[in-house]
Length: 313
Image (cartoon, rainbow, N blue to C red; front, side, top):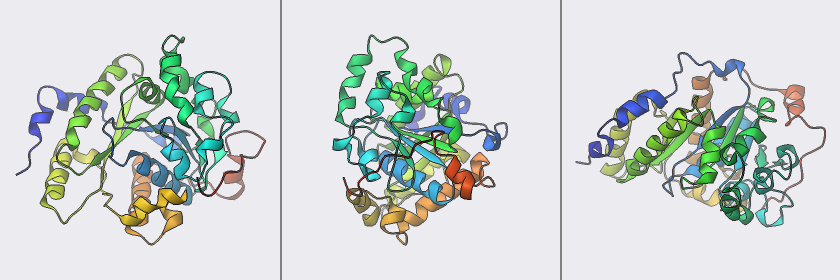
């Protein structure tokens, strides 16, 4: 039998109780631009896949969504059809204070706005080490645009460095993708401790939005056992929707498309749509869909049009 209780000893459960968002006391219906960091320092958990496809699914449901890519790999950028090798400006320039974030926003193929990144971001952590208020650079930048969106998703690097710190300080909550595998909770335990430290100092309002189970393979007993253990510890804060392993879901990024664009009938597309609907219900935004002129007028509060992007990277 698979057990992960040893990963949750001491006061880790208490940390979760402090960090988990109280959906009874917070009603996001009256607040535009909820900023959510998609974060897990363990690689291969479906972090970028979730950022790209959840944002696209919410956009399909009429929500105004911004994706901020601060992972130097730039996979979220290329995953929405933006050629990261041809960017004039990126989130790198925003973090270094060279430009306003509005100057960097481009329109992705999935209909979401994107603050893109490329390999230049690799040097940002070194360049920001001695910078004033280095942990709050992203937070201050996003304040200028958050009210123009229903959701802002930050695709964080698979690490707990300065870029991820900027992501967590800028966010209202954290969405944690957890792969259905044996070592799933090892990275989560470290992340939760980090969130607690950030909550104590840099971002007192930071909460856990929820845990998302990804890459489920119900042909194995391990998947069922991992799901059971994670639900046991995260309780109601694990999303009911579980993202399965899906070939079409893996193929979509190479075409610069979300799964809903690439194959709307695939199980991956269906599940991310279900996840989007579940998130809307839980955050209280399911009855506040932007339509028509309101949707058009909400575009990041600037008069110009978004830059054109290539369909393939």
